[in-house]
Length: 285
Ligand code: C2E
Ligand code: CA
Ligand code: CA
Ligand code: CA
Image (cartoon, rainbow, N blue to C red):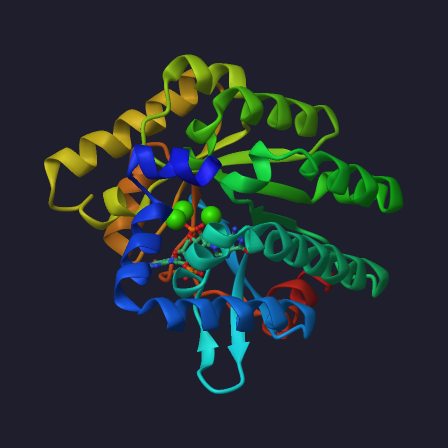
């Protein structure tokens, strides 16, 4: 049902879905779907983590978890190729759950080996928000590991929120009550009503990468980015610019008052081991 809604709004992740759908023949897609189902059971998925940094200092303060599929024949497959298929087939619920479990066990492992713990955000799909169950999953994790409420966050795209804004509002407010922060992902690419934005009580806006791309040469992109930063500030929300690839973009965003940044300029998503050796161990010293 939620996918149908996403279709109607015609933006964001649905575009990927449509593209993949049209590219592959139906049998290929069906095969991909059943392989993915098995991959989840066989733990063929892996998590990478991309740092988020403070604009002023370039210091890493958090990570975003991004899933990859370590496919036996195709090698490392990126989510744009399979999230759409998963979303279309409800497999996305199992996939999101796999990711949540994997993030929690990674955090627990770091925690237990005495490493400093930074915030980790997890992408949650529309289907998972509109169905009940997400809150139960979070509740049981938090009961088991109370420290998680300080470091576990969720990212929800604008499109996912607007698929069922009332339900998204309920879920985000509950999570906030439990201490779990939420970001509105890909902000500016969809059509969130400002009325909902306030009611959602999300902690952070993530400026969609498409605006950051043109920020140094396109007046429109620059104005949109500035407007989002101003909006976040007037709603007392944090703001992260994603897809920062150059020093010039960094300088401009910092001048506009954007406090947090993420992008290849700072780091590509990396496997857990590299995150541990590059960022967590040095913090320990
Ligand atoms: P997203 O949530 O907007 O994630 C950001 C994407 O932009 C990631 O691609 C990241 O690698 C990429 N990126 C980061 N910095 C830069 C940059 O400076 N330049 C460029 N060109 N790209 C950058 P990735 O990992 O391929 O993920 C694509 C999308 O797949 C994500 O977009 C998210 O919507 C979805 N996704 C990824 N992991 C998960 C997951 O665990 N669960 C769900 N439901 N969706 C996921
Ligand atoms: Ca995201
Ligand atoms: Ca994003
Ligand atoms: Ca996206």
